[in-house]
Image (cartoon, rainbow, N blue to C red; front, side):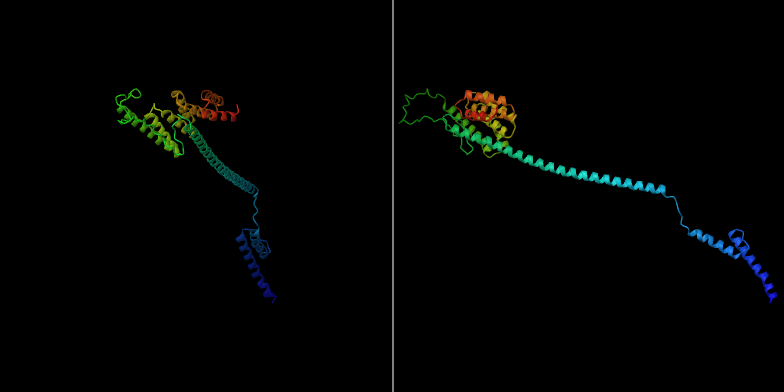
Length: 310
């Protein structure tokens, strides 16, 4: 039996040597006499190393990422601030637009009130003039028609006129000329009434065109100063004070003997007051009171002067 064991030992040693040589060939490392124990240790070592976590230095990349995130957050906050500012500006613009519309509405109301005030004043002036002999022939806003002052022709009846003794000193104008003058007067008053109809209808632009045409067609008649006067009124109602001034001065300077001069002086004084020329306004109104003290316009001028501080 001992002999058999001794016989097996060389084989065992040979096997151990073969295993060691294989381990040495596999790992490329020297193997100790313990053999299997060393080879197992060498086999386990790489597995243990493979299971170790890989640790890297991330401090630099982490800092870079942090700053990038901070920059992104800052940019986002800046965009939000700008958006809020834009929204606030839009709200302010809307408020300003609303205020502008309110001011436009108020301005339109003031303009309409000014137009009505001028027309009401002329209502009173026209009514007063109609009560005075030889007053203006302006129609009132209630729709009165201009009277057609057609000269009466002498009767030719044999019962009332002695043709042998009839005097021709009163009117030596030929009948054909009188008829032509009558037709011209009728056409003039018709054109004047048509222009004034636009005033009654509050169609001021059309009224201005009509009165401009009237004074061009009838530049020197008894109604011409009335046409210029109404042009002044209409321009003043439209806040065109420069044109209003020109029209009123036309009445004052070119038709000195006409009864519309007093009214034109009064309205010119008001125009100057609206233009901010207070001293000039007072001069004109005082001139009116001196030159036409009994006129209704002089009374209105006095009221205006008392209400206007010097």
